Image (cartoon, rainbow, N blue to C red; front, top):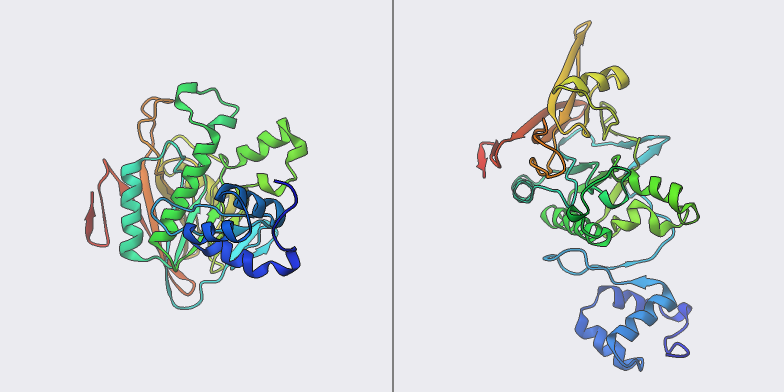
Length: 332
């Protein structure tokens, strides 16, 4: 089409607000009202004129939409350098930690069980501790092309998983910590397309639509700190046996914390002068029999951490052959 039939931006805020929240039937009425031939022409004109996109957030969730913005801003985390701080307050809080899902290599049965745990237990905080997506298409490692879908499909499926989490926990604070697999996007852009690396559309918060799902973001190689006493980070070291990575993280970071990355479940604790501190490895939620490696020494798991002020209790939950017991209930 030629010249836009839409009003100037200064006079269009009410139109934009309605456009981002209405159903398709209303969009069809807008298409006719503003003189466009079809819905596709109208939505394209809205994008070009005002920079707004209607984005589907999940297969079963209501449609939600966002306005393009250049800067992603966290809503509840406070930043101090590489540390992202969350004050949980003095009252009891439940924090669910999951990691290493590796879309499209996630274990779909286990994933559905995790969603049931979220719905049943209503955690106050959900921490997705890295490697939500695999990004095999932009990896430096060689993998059978037959195992790879398209990058677009994997990103869309990752958004769908985020939508499922938000649907299961509509009132929870959700935090996404980037892992080394999310960092593959930065590495690819820096090495293959540095001119694009500074464009906001190509960062993880924008690609995953974290603003739509109201999820705060912690970049790779950064640390989440809960109530000043417990660290959570994806991690960058892998040891041969369960518990050894936790030991390495304790020696590296000190204090108390939880790490992903190694795909193993274990812990390491040490008492000095009567004070006990520990680190936990939180397993993984990906397929335990991937075709790209043989018989990996991995364990599926998740953890629920209960805080009351500065005191906390870590409840690691092993998942074996798609079964586990949590809070007195058998999930299978």
